[in-house]
Image (cartoon, rainbow, N blue to C red; front, side, top):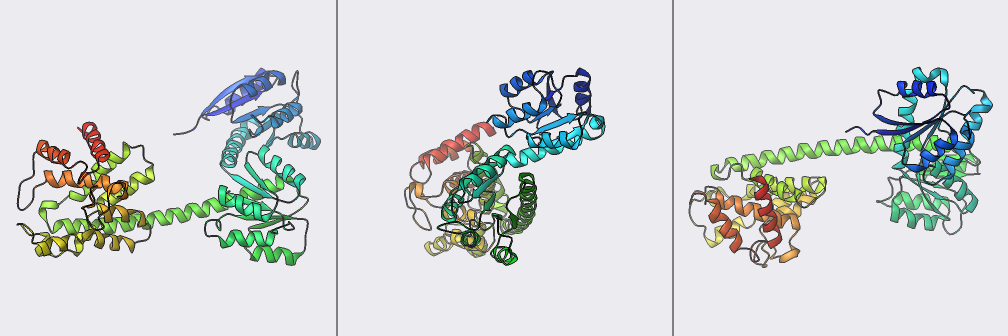
Length: 452
């Protein structure tokens, strides 16, 4: 679903305001107008906006002072400002950017360039809002100047005064990028960079160095230690923001590609394993479709808990693969039409552990192992393979156990016909607190009511 942008246009001319609205009519935007700077400021403070578009030459309060006031206020300082004006000298543009504007456009270019500039500006702003920068410098003034500048540009900012505190902060907050000085007490920039890049949980965070030292050997050394970039003080804030956005954008695309590759490989693996399940169920006509039906029930139940998409996906895959270990069970046991001997039952009880071993060999499916391994545990501790009790049994394994039991009771088997639903539900009720988790049975009944 596309987001509706909230845009405030501040211009003394109703004709110009109409031109701007016309240029933006293909955007999904809710546009509010103000005819002078003072009124524009009041409206800006009264509600959330995604963008301000203002002229410089305004009644009551000019666009430069308006921009400064917007950038000083906590509620509006991260909202981008576009100046659209007939005043297009280098000095006018410089004053606009110094006041905090993100872009500057001539009124002659409203029809040709405004829509694209608005789209890019809002997109960049949204990108920044979702990004946290950690600024580490022993100079309080540098932390203040850089931190406030990045805040005004829309980034979330965290600060620390040395590498040791910066490392602790990074471990707690896991920022999207670290911006660090080199010469600091307790832990300098070299040590800090090495510590970040040697920590498996932090090594994917881009590390940018800011320093007055222009010595090439220093630059090479810190880059070899894992720094993503080196910027020399003093620098222009816009220059720093462009560098940060470029690094974060490249980093995001790299992570996105890695995630896509990982997900593709994972789906291929699941497809292969699901094929094995299909082959397994083809051995026994009486259990055909069992795993898919169990997975469908489990997903329906888990959704009712308000679980995340990743948890729902995990429960679904676990439901599909819960019996994968039966691949390792002999046909004369798995397909036996009569009662199993003690030795045969002990053999079939191995299938959760066999399944867990199969899943353990597949990258990306380790979170499924608890479901596969524990779906035959009982809340009274008399299940297998480990005799887990109550909440020792993983939650989604307890949910899977209820779905698995219901489907087994209502399905035809070589030695009996499937039970009527009423009889199966009676048996499930009788096994609450012994075999089955009471909360999971309640969840099952809730799903059953919704499904029917």
